[in-house]
Length: 529
Ligand code: FAD
Ligand code: SIN
Image (cartoon, rainbow, N blue to C red; front, side, top):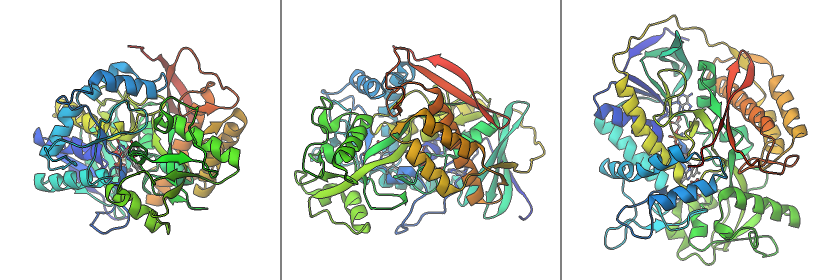
């Protein structure tokens, strides 16, 4: 590696998706000096892959438009709590959902366009668990790509410093308080000194063999937080989307088939043409996601087939309404004109994450987290569809307010330690074990065997992006497994064959890293109102 570069800022943002760029832009608006680190390459139109999950979002943003009479914050809160299976915290949920409309309005002011009707009102679709049509979308099912583009252009106009191809290796802490972040840009080490660092690193999908997430979703924020001394919470709740396109034997990022397809008339049927969700839930194919994913898995088991089918024959103008899905299906060598898409449940979203309060603060002063890597309490044991982009917007804005309050705090420029060695499990072995034993159905025997594999992995230096990602995957997977072992009940996305009952007293559980051990640090009863 070459000589180290150094820079100073009021705020270092790690991640350039919806949470990171919203926070960075809001902080720049407030006069802060901001630097954004993005391990992904700079994206150009036409590039096949994008580094953020934000770019791939399809269905849209769940938000209550105060001008619309059939919806209300109360109803959105109720749907979110119902989907969250008793673990959604109403004290954080209501304020986040209430701040949704101003946050979306600001996104529109920054240049985002959503699909509208002839009167200029937002078109709204429906997804699982929503009792009304409340999901606004852009370009049909290209919501994320349009939002990412708008934020990227706003960042350009604001002159925001975004360091692409730059991976954050460590959060730097002195006397228990954040002083900056260490990073590597194209092989050259650097450090950004700042009183506040925001983790906005997205998801963890690649702890599984097949996922809807982009390649960089390797749990870096979870690993950075744990190594910095922060707590993580409720990591056992990994959401599997019911309709990931099925391609036999395929690994890595797979095409999602949006839940909005079912909102517009798509139906899930097994290979014999029977409904997958009949008799399972009053909302049928539009039940909360964990329920539908389990119904899909049950139908596959019942029929012995490798997938179920999404019948799209009842969806008007499918290719026009869902151009992103159509392109993804075609890129996989399949065709939408046949009217039936093969789908399976796929690893999609981490409901738990770095534990934060309602302002994005972790328990390490100066370390904030927002977006998918954070756990605010909104998603409970199973996230309500399309609440994630909304949370990224709202918590991104709040993180900027918190960073502004910390401007001017003394930053001690400590000696930057070498990136230490970390446990690294072979990636394929890790993904296969997690997919086999820590997916929709779990039990103690399977979880313990994965824990033994991961906890016994060799120590390796984090020398480049690949080895750093492998270390993050290993630590994140260990934390998921530890949390899953501790939770001896079935709830939402976490189903234990050996503990099928749901406890009457839901608790949110935090873990910290103590030396090399993940230890349960705190349990909190979830408030009911
Ligand atoms: P991301 O958008 O994933 O951005 C993470 C950023 O962190 C990237 O820039 C990455 O390069 C960077 N990064 C990671 N690690 C490091 C590191 N060590 N150093 C530097 N940079 C790093 N949600 C909805 O609400 N509605 C939807 O319709 C919807 N559809 C979805 C469809 C798909 C296919 C997927 C995968 C997700 C979907 N979701 C949807 C979920 C939602 O898109 C994500 O949860 C959300 O976009 C996450 O935003 P984020 O800003 O937290 O992270
Ligand atoms: C989808 O379009 O089905 C994804 C929505 C989400 O993950 O919130």
